[in-house]
Image 1 (spheres, rainbow, N blue to C red):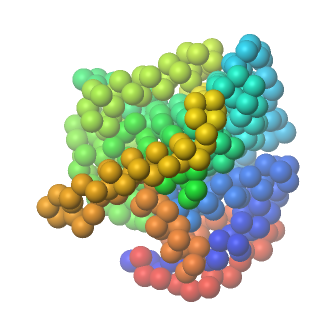
Image 2: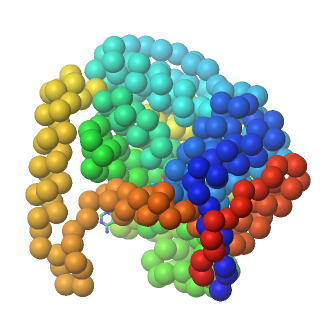
Image 3: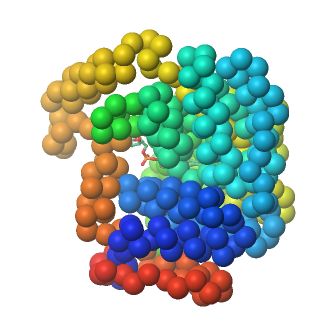
Length: 357
Ligand SMILES: NC(=O)c1ccc[n+]([C@@H]2O[C@H](COP(=O)([O-])OP(=O)(O)OC[C@H]3O[C@@H](n4cnc5c(N)ncnc54)[C@H](O)[C@@H]3O)[C@@H](O)[C@H]2O)c1
């Protein structure tokens, strides 16, 4: 059992920004990383919040990512752009790709940017929300390091390849789907490991031999379970195709990443902005979304549940609590972040309280 420090989000943001800037990252990208990581953590997506700080620092230390690069367009053809991330930080690349997708969608109704030679950008939601804040339906996907075997296989061939969709409208449109194409994101297994948990829930992972496991250590070096069997496998393949094949970037085991540390990550990303106003007024779309959400939630809850939720709701609820009461960071994770901060001479913020994990 650990005693987790709890911080104000407004204290964590400048701290992470300074910590990133102390590691050769320009101010704009450092701020972007801080804002997006703290946002994910505040939303309860701890797997893609501050937990990524030690991973990013390790990448910078090893020289596997080039913080001086932000990437550049390779080609622009109508509503379509191919972008070369030049091994820059994933957040710097993603931010620019979203800007291009929004610009192209304003001009053409749709804007699609595929990026290659990029890096990990954190939770996909931040980027899809950036597009939906501009009146677009934002769809984001990316590849990740190989940890998922194809259905009926036992050798890793794909990453956890997330798919995210965000819609415009009041309160974030009321619906935000952001999901790995595996039962859970790998970050949840890293989190179980950081917390010293020996067991993970059934259905999350298999060992290296492709046998289902609930042992955290086996899962760490094993395989992630595809979402819904061969259907999740098909979705992961689709993400590889839209990101890796279409961008002419790295595919499948050509990626580096969490387990392959001797070469760059080579992540590919897909950003689609759909200008809602080309279909109907944004207000009308928001009304229709509201109706769909209400109709969905009007279903009687199944046995064992109090209510029906739509995607995004669990995270918005956590966000409301954490922005009010503070953001808990697991003690082992905070210790490793504090160690990195000490190494770079960056002062850590004071916790506002502690809570038993
Ligand atoms: N950058 C990368 O390489 C990478 C790779 C994989 C995943 N990720 C990120 O990992 C994060 C976590 O992914 P995950 O798949 O573990 O998330 P998850 O399983 O916690 O949630 C997936 C989706 O289901 C929704 N949901 C949860 N409970 C629900 C309920 N009871 N009713 C209705 N909807 C519900 C959530 O709102 C969310 O949209 C995401 O932010 C994703 O972008 C990033």
